[in-house]
Image 1: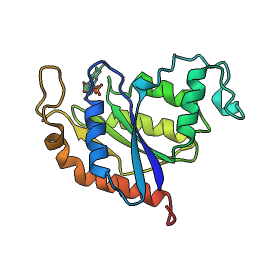
Image 2: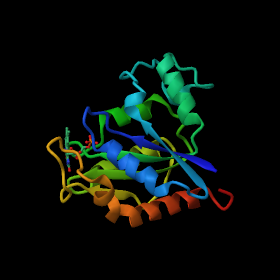
Image 3: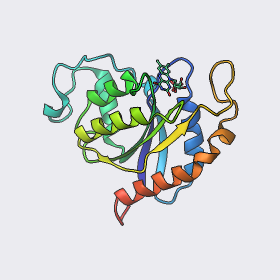
Image 4: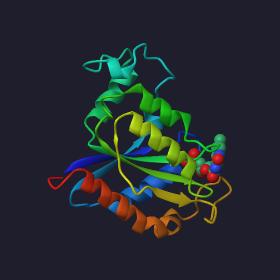
Length: 189
Ligand SMILES: Cc1cc2nc3c(=O)[nH]c(=O)nc-3n(C[C@H](O)[C@H](O)[C@H](O)COP(=O)(O)O)c2cc1C
């Protein structure tokens, strides 16, 4: 069984991100080869650029801060990732970039796919994030999943009114992304 972390890349006070993450893990619960766990970046407060060394050059995860060391341990034991990214001004959130940049070897070589969302699915954020994952030496797994928020029923707080019904049309695409993740681990996954 491989462990896939479903990373919520948005840390805003009111977010669609956890709604998508909760729907996603409900959809994939009981998978034969992969187990899924939500990692909410809001639970892993990493101040901006507090590490003096470039993570790529560190051996044995000798990070300066306890926050980075804890995050390093969490990411190191994961086998793969589904990164949930909203689109903010045509890009992906700073909190997600900050989290990625805090580590290096913990990400490298591991399969990762992207679920983007935004008014029209957040493709620009996904494209930028793909570049960064490639730079980290991750095994980028496609197809990516894109959820368009434009046509969904939203409440006054800009949250999705009925997440399970709203995201149901994305179930088939999610299945394809998860199958691709399984293939990325090879026949012995
Ligand atoms: C700062 C900011 C910038 C945004 N820029 C875009 C954008 O470029 N394209 C888009 O489709 N939606 C944009 N949106 C709308 C977000 O996709 C939408 O608010 C979504 O719910 C954000 O995800 P979150 O609630 O998980 O943070 C933006 C939202 C914020 C807060």
